[in-house]
Picture 1: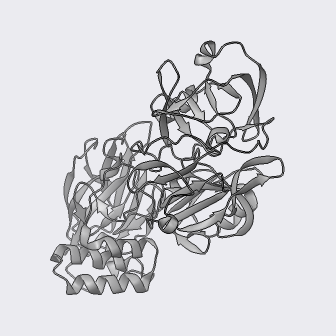
Picture 2: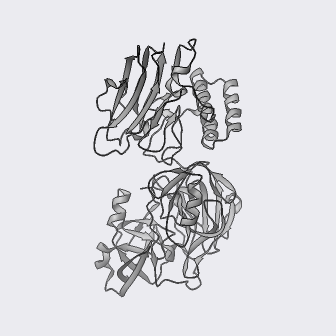
Picture 3: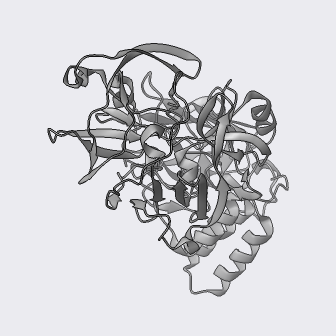
Length: 494
């Protein structure tokens, strides 16, 4: 679940002795959601051969194992105090068991620590039986290739470093905390150390003073969280970065941000390498969206709010063999970057006999999540594409996450409203359900049944003499999760 932060620090941990040369595990396939809204998991084995799903966490100082397995570890060596985001917890330490990854025996510390992993298992949606921490990871050069879905353990002395990308020195987080950090943060500031935290499944977090700067340019999201079209790291722009405020002594970089790169963590030589592979975040495989391939480059320019690049990409599409519909969608998307005020429907000249509601100004617009948007999806951390997608793409429409309301001044000048409505494709499997309602001059003239899944509703409303038009989306249940409603191609006609 996005934004889950681990970052366990064993308070008695410290820097250790010279590292032995370990046996290297083979290459592994990553779990599907690693860096795409979920944690990176590996399957460890005890000498008994039992499979144990462990979370790979560079933000945790020491390896821990679920307390249900403590009876197999022998006599406890003593208590151990953990601290996670200011909360201290006492557990027990045990002599470290032999751990294998694939056929390779891992280099471990002398001890392993018990921990209750039930909450992590619940958040992940699958069993988590432990955390593979820095007491083990520090012995290895690990490459995370999210584009290929591979995790590799490399011989750093023999590996070809040409494709590894830019090098960033790994330093201790601070004088009391040896966990790995770099001297950059996701606001673009150099100097404050950011914890390299693969146990944070979001992009990362900022200390309060930096978060306040961030929210001046970001899109508000959940409480204590913000999203921005313009995250920065080492002078490069990163769109759709989602960060939280954390009242701790450092900033942090999570696995969702790292997943935009080929990441090589050469812990023995204290260097992180990043080779960028993706402009935006990698899509969560559970959130299915419809792709319009000719628009890929234009979509990224729109996300970056780069008007010149968007107009250039539109010109290329208009000169290409792209379909008339794809070209129309492209024009509407580029137009969303133009802040010229739109006219109200009542102010359009008589010769305009048909107009999409997305092309006119509402008197009121409010939505239950993110912000109102016409002819696109607003910038957000869940769905990278701005396309109006309800199983197929629509050129015009309104984003209307429940509860939402759009009000238009018609002044009796229009005859009909026709169109469709439905849920965004990505959230069709998860939405609790919505109801679409249309009112004219305060009177309800259309009410849909409860819409869930891929169901679409159609409406054809008489507007003769109507002065005020209202489009409403209500939630159908107490829960409001996933209710990304869309008014699709709503067209006013004379």
